[in-house]
Structures are given as structure tokens and as C-alpha cells.
Amino acid sequence: MHKIAVGGLLTTTGLLTLTAAPAAADVRQAPDCAEVECVALTFDDGPGEHTDELLDMLDEHDAKATFYVLGSKIDAYTDVVRRMVDQDHEVGNHTWDHADLATLSADQIKDDLKRTDQAIERATGQVPATMRPPYGSLDDTARGAIDKPMLLWDVDTLDWQHRDPAKTVDITTRETGQGSVVLFHDIHKTSVEAIPEVLDRLSDEGYEFVTVSEMMGSDMVGGTAYSDARSMD
Ligand SMILES: [Zn+2]
Image (cartoon, rainbow, N blue to C red; front, side, top):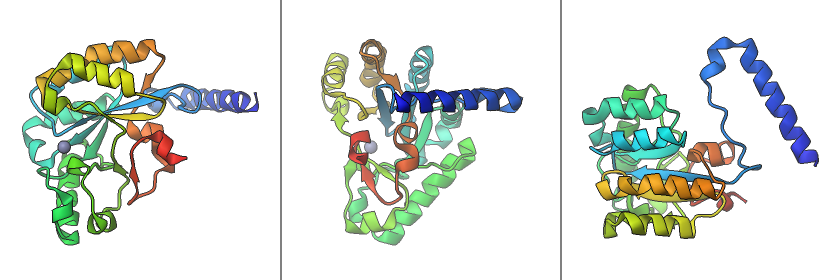
């Protein structure tokens, strides 16, 4: 009971603040994942030719997601990356061109991530808060060289492998739990095709779709790897 009372008080305070500051009216009020079930849908290796359509689908559900983009692809899709941020999605760093970080030196890793950060910042005005290592591949050198929280996943849809929307829906709905981070690749048409049903089914189960930073945010520590919100405990 005490917890609910405190939550109510915070919400009231937040609303009062919004009323007092008109410029803040557009600021998203993210769901409180301590009170409701949250899931973070994540999309890797884009942006690509299907990403804009995916953004339409997410917008229809008012669902927020996280995009781990490749720096090398940003120039061709600047408007799409900007749209991600405009729609309150999160843009994360997935390296310049999908290097296996376990094969690089610390300096090479830092240069790669910095170049990618700069491309994202040029497109969106924001420096990414989190990164995801390609293939989930990290060694001690990489762990020591990376100063952002490193986001892995607990639900792997294997969408890139089977390219079957029904399978993507099935794995996602079967394996998702409170605080899950689900891995998709928005460069594949078949992955994007799965998303309306993923949103419908998980929404029916009561899930709220939030970004990884909304779900795990202030508790994440730079240089630490996380697979889901349960790994925070
Ligand atoms: Zn990737």
C-alpha cells in the first residue's frame, strides 16, 4: 500500500510540473515498470528500407522501442533516425559496421564507438546512452574499453535465421516475461511483418512497450553488460 501511495504522489507532482511549464507538455511520461509489466523491443543492424514502416506500426500502438543502429547506415537514413528520436524511441550504438569487438584492440573499439556516436549525434542531436556489441561478442579488452551500459537480450527471436514472421511472433510471445529485452533485426521485411501481431499479443497480456533506458535507466552502470531488467536485481 505504501508503495502505491508514493507512486500516486510522484505522479501528481509530475502533472503539476507539466502544467507549470508549457514547454514540457511534450515530454513523455514513461510507464512505471515497478507498477506495470514492461518489455523492451530492440531492433538491430538498421536503419534499413523497412524501418520507416516499422515506425508507423509502433506509432499506431504508441509503443516505444530501442534501435541499435550501425553508424555506416545513418547517412542514407538520416530522416528515419531523426524520426526515431522524435517519436520517443531510443537510438543506441551498434558500432560503425558490425565489427566483432572481441577481435579489436581497446583503441580500435573506442574509435569505432566514438565515430558511431558522432554520426548518431549529427542526425539526432543526442549521444546514445547505451550500446549493443554485434553478435553479443565481448572479451575482457572490450569490456574494459566500453564506458556505456552494454545491452544484450534475454529473448532471441532468431528472426535473421528463419525469416518467418509466425515463428518470430511465437518465440516472442512464448519467451517474453516481465522486464525482457527482445532482439529483432529491422533490416528484414519478415521481421517487421511480425511486429503488428507481437504488439497485439503482448499488449493483450498487459505489457507496456518501453525503451531499454526507460526500463532499466538510472540504475544502469557504464561498462556493465545487461540482458534484461531482472539482471538488475
Ligand atoms: Zn547486429
